[in-house]
Structures are given as C-alpha cells and as structure tokens.
Amino acid sequence: MKLFRWRGRGEAAQTMTTPLAQAMALYQAGRYAEAEAEARSVAAARSRPRDDTYAPLALGIAALAAGAQGRHADAVTTYDALLPVFGRIFGAEHPQTLKLRSDRAQALSALARHAECEAECGAVARVAARGTGPEMALITTAARNGQIFALTALGRHSEAEALACEALAAHREPDRFTLVLRLGLARSLNGQGRHEEALAEAERADELRRRLPQEQRRSETGAVKVAMATALLGLGRATEARPLAADAHDACLAAFGPDHRRSAEAKALLDRIDSA
Image 1 (cartoon, rainbow, N blue to C red):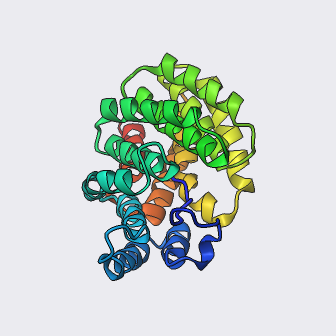
Image 2: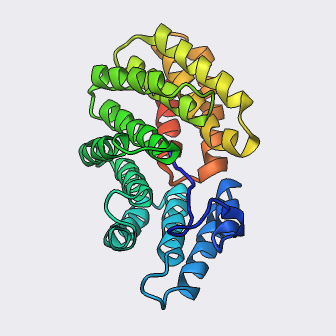
C-alpha cells in the first residue's frame, strides 16, 4: 500500500505546487513509465545541493513507479540507496523515512523476500504507532498491510488474520486502506480453508472498491477479483471462479503489465483453475 505525502521538510501540505506534482499526478493516473521518467528528471535537475529534499523524494517516486511496472529489483536497489539519505535529511523516525522503509519492505515481498518484509513492516508499524498525527496513523496502517501480506505468504495465516482484524478495528474509514486490509483478511481466511468467510470479506472489499475514485479502483480491481476467485475455487465453484480469475488477470495486465507480482499471481490462479 503506497502513501503520497511527498513534500519537502518543513513545507506545508500544498503538494500540487511542488516540483513533484507532475510525477505524482502521473503515478496516481497509472502512467507509471511517464511518472518514473518525470521523477528521475526532477531528481537530476536538483541533485547538486546536498540537502535538497526534493531530489531524494523524487527518486522515491521513481522507485514506486518502477515497482508498479514490475521492476521490483530495480525498486529495491533505489530504496537501498535512498535509506541513508532519508535518514540524514529527515531523521530516522520522520514520516518520510518510515514511509520509504514501508515501501521498500513491500517491494521485498514482491521479490518473495517475505520474512524480511514481515520483520521490517512490523518494525515500521511499531515506530509509527508511537507517533502522532494523521501521517503516522496512515504509515502504521500501510505497514500493517504489508506485514499481513507477508505473513500469509509465509503460511502464518492465523497471525495474519489476527493482525488484519486488529488493523481494521483501528482504521474505520471506508477508504482504500480498509479495502486492502479486507483483502488481507480474505487472503488469510482462504489460507485457512475458510472460503465462505473469505468470499464474504472479498465481496465487502469489492463494495468498497466500487465507491473509490476511478484512479484508485483501477489498481485494486485485479486483487479483489483474485480474492473472490480463490474463495470460489476453494468452495468447488470453479465455473464461477474461472471468469473472475480471467478478469483479474486482464485487470492486472492493464494496470501493471506482465512482470508485476499481481499479474503473476492472477495468471497462476487462472492456470490452477484450468488444470483442475
């Protein structure tokens, strides 16, 4: 789950007037290659002053955009280079640094480095939970979402379920954060063979998805349909699961391209249905 709070140190939250505005707008519109190019252009133009905040922030957006195109290893390489820079400029417990750590951890999970993701997301969430203000609350939620995904990937489904329920209780807004937490809960329930409950959670997530702005719906459509199709397949309803899985794969390809983790997950589910 990605947050957008990209502003310079000490600057008011008027992000659409910053040098990052165009890159952010392109990213949020799903134009990831253009967003990456724009962000790298901003970083190059502002690279000379050692303490310029916008150059590293722009590279953070470039890393997000690279990951959204399925270039997860490239994203992690950029994050690794940025971590000491963010620590020096912003401080170890600043929201920008914690956000970067959360984004990096979730890129690790896309590379199947789930144990590292789980540990780092847990560490970020613990630090952010001690902070105050809306940014820290959102970072906590985003990190918990990454931790939930990693726990399910590690087969620790009951832990993932408990953490998802805890996070949902703490975050009650009907927004994209709640949607992804419900998907995490559905994933954990599917992992425990509780497919009826998983289907109900995935359907709740789909209701939320339909109420989101278009730019947010686009990136979550495939994940919602994967969760629903997985539950239906577990219930022995393969004829209903198959078109949903096909739609999920098409949605992931349209949003992220063939190399992204979500596209691979949807394709694996589709192949599993077809081979059953």
